[in-house]
Amino acid sequence: MSVRVIDTVMMGHIVLWNIMKEKDAIYSKPDFSDEDGIKVSELEEQFAEMDGWNAEPEAASLLSGLRHCRSRSAKTMKELNGNQKVRVLLAQAIFGNPDFLILDEPTNDLDLQTVTWLEDFLLNFKNTVIVVSHDRHFLDTVCTHIVDIDFKKVRCLLEIILFGTRAVNWL
Image (cartoon, rainbow, N blue to C red; front, side, top):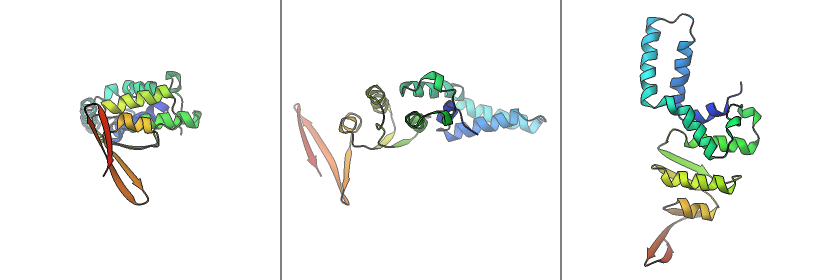
């Protein structure tokens, strides 16, 4: 079974995704019981609290920001090439406002416009982000703290800006 692109993104919020699937399973039962009605009402309440009605438009918005055209959102993951799959999986990682993001080389295979969108997204992201990247410009734009791990040594970058002069020290 192949999964639609938009569904793949929404799977990034696992709790919401599981509620959606459980609701669908109950609604599709031919012998809907009173207990099913109670259970589905509880699920609908949780779904509403998580703003589930806006999940698909939010997923589509993320895909659009990552320059994944709308016509591809209805396609299945099987139909996409490797570069397109990476964009979908990046959207999945950031969908649902996770408490923290761990991104490994997130700018690889992205064009400049998409990198700029990702920078803006991360600058406005209120939670913790850990980025592994060799893209110095990207790191300078999105990072508040930099740790260099090299040859089993860890160094923290201390950047001080005084009177418009930038001083960089490694601790």
